[in-house]
Image 1 (cartoon, rainbow, N blue to C red):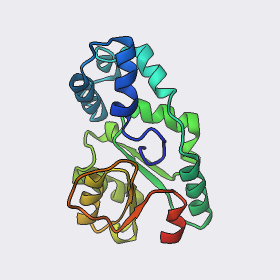
Image 2 (image 1 turned 180 degrees about the vertical axis):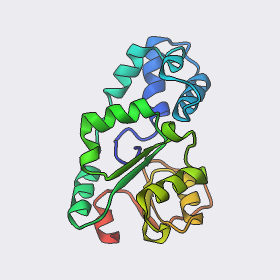
Image 3 (image 1 turned 30 degrees about the horizontal axis):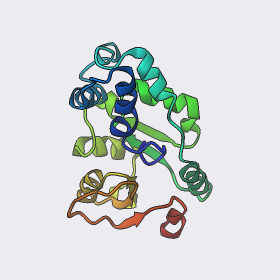
Length: 189
């Protein structure tokens, strides 16, 4: 969802700053751990609220805004006949809320949320689940992600990789393509 939404890395860029306003002594590591556990389905939403209060979570979810350029490009791709899917490291409840709020299921034929499967990108299992559920051949898939680490695993599975470069990242992995604007996808695809 970091590719579809303008927030990028949601814990660092949105949730943690919001928590600091609520509690200046908020611990980033504890919030990040709770988020990862929640996105894996290891803890429930109620247990997540022990770290991030329910009202803060609600404010946080209401901060999400789709990247208009990316959504317009996705619409263009769908009109061109591409089957679009989402593979996200998002807790099930957050994903369901955002899917409903922004009607993402009308644009994307398959949405896989890590919280439903107990695994997160870059774990190979989540990509395999996506490929099995979509009935797509890896070589026919393009994975667009804002994390080079997530793209690296997709390449091992023979997917074509497109890095949506929102933030500088240090890694030796070189994706098949790099974009800085969603409209560049039209040139690639």
